[in-house]
Length: 201
Image 1 (cartoon, rainbow, N blue to C red):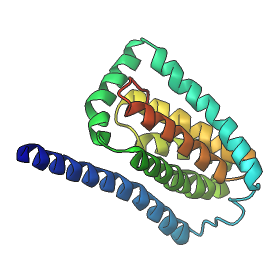
Image 2 (image 1 turned 90 degrees about the horizontal axis):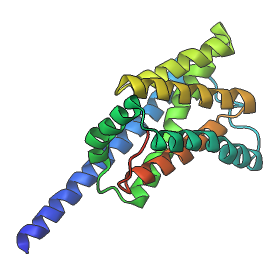
Image 3 (image 1 turned 90 degrees about the vertical axis):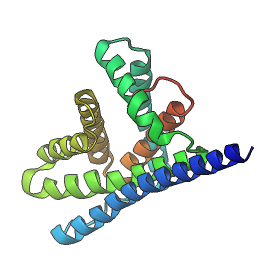
């Protein structure tokens, strides 16, 4: 009994430590975004427009294609998808094991806000001035993919996701839309992952 309690306590501490590190990493990206914006004179003025009703509508509709990709990959038996699925099972699931619903929500929210603030709000917006919107979109998406390049397949998929999120920012003129889409996608994907199912990135 005592051994079970101590094992349970140590597992809880490990889970809390892992969750804290992941949240700290995402928040660190947010701080980096603010520092880069200050250093290079990137303004957030006008990046959060569009109104809440429009943001919610575009955000929910914009999540559908990414969730469709998730389901498509989940149903695929292609060799590269199976390899990616094995990588997720071996290396990613252990990182999130034991994280509860509130932890999943916080991780998805912090990733959606902080990663979009950095890659779309600062990098893509900042590069659009000297290079134009389309080269900026491509460069920011490649950097987004490189930041997630745990495997070549994961790099390609996250680069495509970065292109899509960047296009949403261009089309809607609001950083809030890709933030919401990123958050909703991560929330669903993480919840699915932690239910023990096979899952895409």
